[in-house]
Length: 402
Image 1 (cartoon, rainbow, N blue to C red):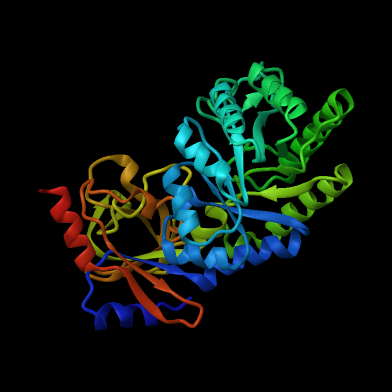
Image 2: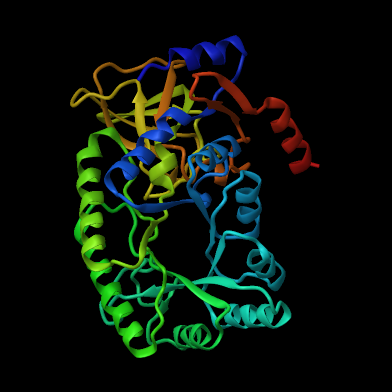
């Protein structure tokens, strides 16, 4: 991938690094891969992965839906013209829930008894309204040990067991109130996953459960939502993704004839579309390793062990000088890239480009150590436009340091 156009744009506009780019053409690659190999699927982009408005509008134009976790994200999805929205999360206020239930083309995912009480109050207040509802369920073994905060940890906050009072009360509402429509059974059980058996096992388990509920109560959901959790897209994993999606398609078609399949990719769709330009501001040798200190800091990249940041330039090699990429903050979590090899060491002042930064990055931009940064969008016609300007950043400084 050549970055000549971006470098020319940076220098012509006298821009200082770091500078984030979101590229629409790159965003299409993972989206088209899903569409080609996971047939008859409904795709909902997990908005929490990226708040870049031009990119969100681009996804909305591709006729996919949005999955949101809060009122801010709901309003953002509406602003960006997503026609179908799944509202997930916890602790939603009555006013927000009422706004969701009053809106067309939205599905409200119930997570607690309080959510159910709000839905019931809404139905009592609005006698002619229907509610499209879903519930997030957990199918995992309660006795098995998982690490803290793992999606399958028995004490994880997300979702409800099928023997819980919340789930029982949800089913009772669906049974007794014909305006409460069971649209989705929702699952989310993994992160950075490429193993098809993880998904096929979940499909088989939820199939058995839905069959049982249908037999006992004669109710069932219209759609099955496998959530997100796909590994971040990259070209060298395309064959594995093809296998993953085809196996999910095969298993779902085998098990379900009435339900529609839904997935909620977030970072899978947007991470690959983002790359950030920085400068190498120092090089420090520690024994046989060279630390490349960059101005790409935690204001740009969230320090997270699940991140899949990738050095794009200078281009890595299979051997040579062992390098790591970090910023100037002393915390070890600020290591952008822990381990890579370069045939030739760069010079202080050279450009550096880090890829796979289009998810969970700009969302978390803060003043921690460094200022917010310039953001550009590169469109399908290769035109580049600054979407967060230096002027915008000065306004943020004025607000933050008033």
